[in-house]
Length: 611
Image (cartoon, rainbow, N blue to C red):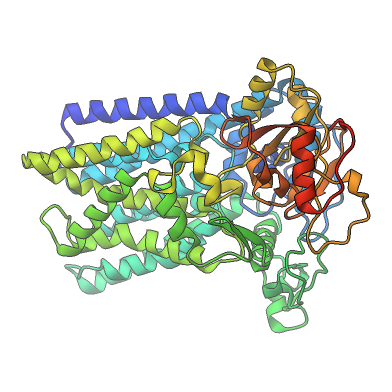
């Protein structure tokens, strides 16, 4: 393939610059999200202690790279943490004390860590551009890159200190090099593929899928070698090198800690590995066990680091629970196999959907725009495998788990540049309009890309009718609430139910927790006067408005459990404002409160009560 024309390279550079600018703006606009609150202190802990117990569930590479500049800023990490018990998620308990200890510059420290996400996303965009260019030409590279740069899902997660975008880019980059290797096998490319496969394993445990996907790709794209015997032996040796080197890199990433520990010495908490049943949704202080202890398998030395294996076990435990999940206005026990199909339908711009489906149709029909069935298979097997896997794990449903499938599909969509290259201007004009519509839809929601929903779903302002939690509300709008409160000093005292692991007092917001409403089916010893609603000003995360459960800061330094449906009474009121898209502000009068209380079967209030 000839290098792309100079103007294609210039356009690609402009797209990447625009992408970086959008991310840098988002970094300062959106507050620390729930998972980031744990990732940042965990990453610092890895550097300072050399251990990985503070965050086992996913490998350490993304958060260690992200927190390196934070480490140089010398944050205060002198706070106590609970004991490390089997299955305990210590990262969530590290978030609040780290925020409190560094309150004056907490957000600035997290923004420093977020810069790594910009670099990851730029690398991902460059690989998307290069792969599409090699398959379909320079204009195709620009088309695929534009879809990456203006994807609301990419923009949403590239700005965060979480492993989802790094794992997406690492998986893409490793698979791209493996594709290059299969096109022209060589020992240098085998070394490079093995190195990148190992680095990918250090980003997120989901990429264990690559050990199944790559052999399948090799089989499907196999071409008979010119010298069968000699080439077959070389290929087998190179395949062994790729696997062995990836395992070595994985172990080196953990400093070889616990590698070789007999399998029977571990304390597991998942049903799969412990062999013990447990109650659904139990996530802490699980009774550990080990189904391998006492047998021949228990004497087998683990070929991976201890914390890596324990992290997979804890993640498996979480997937085994029938957690309450919200979909299209309803909560249910456990997720749904079709969750990701539904989420893709409502959270991907309609213009992008049209382009992707058109590109897939051309590939299936063998249109001249395609690159041949072997190349197309290489772009479609990984996303289909990822989608199948995450859909099968119904214990947890988060749209971000599907992010690794995005770049492969976008590379394949680049083939539509065929209509530009061949001068078919009617079709080219339609495609250009679809691309512009997709980018425009994203920019209309910017910088609220985490809460993006397409027009079919009613737009970002209607996202709560479809999904909540990290699919919409991850605590990102606290800065917007702070700005609203600065402009409305009359909104005091404030009742605030905030969905996050960070206490809003780090931004100087004074508040108290709103009174919980009666929870159906729960034993409640509170008096009716203690139950909500009450008059006053309130700001409530949409996750809680839509009946979600979690813990919430109470404004006094403690945290309270909010049960499922604890704040659903706010659905009876109309918000007077929205801070961002996910913090809804209410002004409730005594008359309005009493009217709703009577419908709920509660005694009316006789006087105003401060929230």
